[in-house]
Length: 466
Image 1: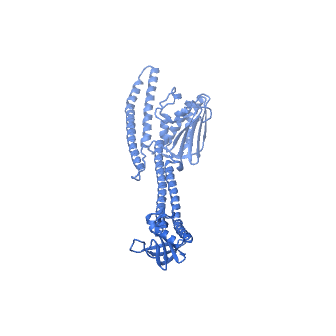
Image 2: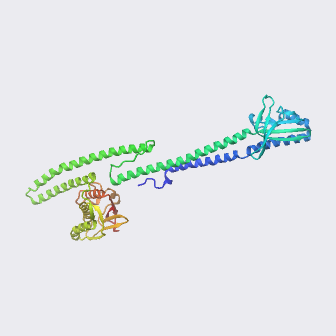
Image 3: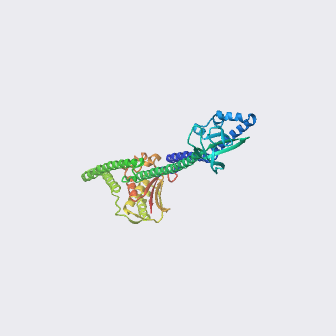
């Protein structure tokens, strides 16, 4: 049995899918941020601010003349108080300069000398230059490797407006690099979460298959495979195996006690039966010896079942024609069926399998005996044998008193008797013995309610591999 057949319905997959979805959303946002930093948005804004300053000063010059412009520039209105500069940090403001010169001399602005252009080049579709500038209050000149510069003539004067964009270039590089690192980490997280989900589901299914095999075969020798020690499922498997060890020891101890009791009581019962044979009253002798025989048969059956379940000996296995064995069983029970006016039919295909002939005969005989015993006069019993899709299927169906559907799962238990059969003779070990024989042959035993569609009855199905 697979615990999680549909992988997409497992909680592990859902957690992995959630993490993958969140990682994908984060990747999309980071790519958007990367595209944003890779574009010319920030440089465009800086260029727009430079153009706005130049246009504003040009307009002021046309209206009020150069004296008003020099006064405004020296007062710092266009370096700090303008709409474009008011939101800039002190570091960014220091990268902006505004200079008015005449005949090569600085008249106004925040530089001590006219910007010196050392190299012109194209950066991100903008004409930029490498400038050497010296800000007022500073002794050492500064080199702006990437700078936007605009020069506007104001009559005899020249307006120099510029800004260093080295910090924007560094921010672009950092944004791209950091974005790629995060994208790679998120991709690894997505792959890792999916791999963990697959690992957990596979481990759970392996545990479920082992547990299901233990339930179906009754073999407590099965153990969960432990191939790692770092995860919680491995720890759970280890604890589960310890629990199986304890259960196996307990069951073996119980079976040992039961077998010992059955073995020890069989000899005294045999002596008791021999003593009961000396009773002179015929009726009393028959009744008491019959009860002693029933007890002996019960203990013999217990020992037989225990031997089949614990030793799993297959010395008697050989290529066996099942149809011949079933024909013998049907012939054996035909007189009993005719005596009870029960119609006994068989439909048998020739099938060859590796089996113990004596055990198979006993298993089929037990089931057919029950079918005839619990079928009413005028009833019908059908026996069929077929080889279908690589499996050998043997079924014995009747329309007798049957059992309730909720009782079917208990029919293989030792000493269990269905409510409807308690008035009949029996000890509840017949189907337990049949189940042990079927398991010895690596087969499965099935019970079907109302197999002949008569509103009652029970079907017993043997299923074997080729």
